[in-house]
Length: 105
Image (cartoon, rainbow, N blue to C red; front, top):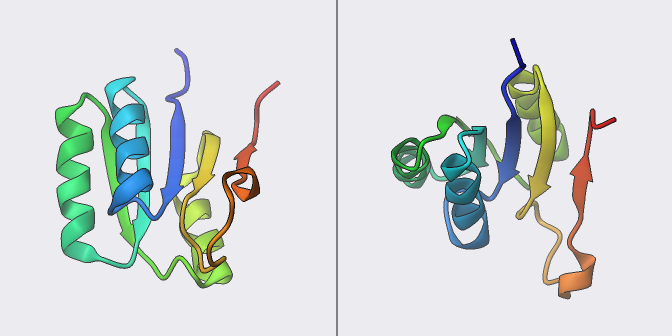
């Protein structure tokens, strides 16, 4: 049996993070949702589930690198992709965004 595809998204409660979560949900992925806003994360989780994904919301301060790493370790049994949309890095140009791929290949 194939392991589930897992993505973890910081800043998942709004904007680009929320849209990214819905997109992965529509592909049937397990979607780890990290953000500070509990209510907004619940809404995003419902949207991911409605799109066909399996959400897991974790309320965490995405500006705290240690807290994010702990949350990712909780979620990352078979993590394929981590998308960091938020995390206290300030305003960055588009080319400053980083998507890390782990466990591929």
